[in-house]
Image 1 (spheres, rainbow, N blue to C red):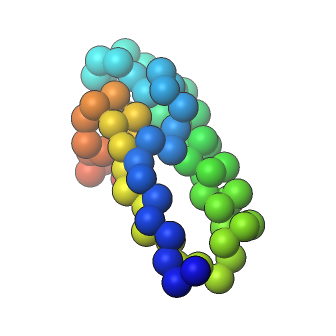
Image 2: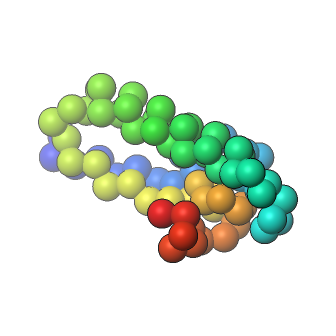
Image 3: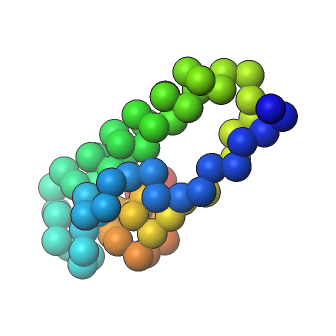
Length: 73
């Protein structure tokens, strides 16, 4: 396979904050990032020599349905 297109929503639903400021400690966002890292690791295991082109979905940021803020890159 030359490349793999990976649609967004890596993270499990209901991990991201529902409203901005709901999780001031950032615990939920850490769980989102851990989930994305786990998916990426598993994909890399099975497709080690394949170019992967992921996109972020509405559950992959700090706040549900919001783009990832520059501060949260």
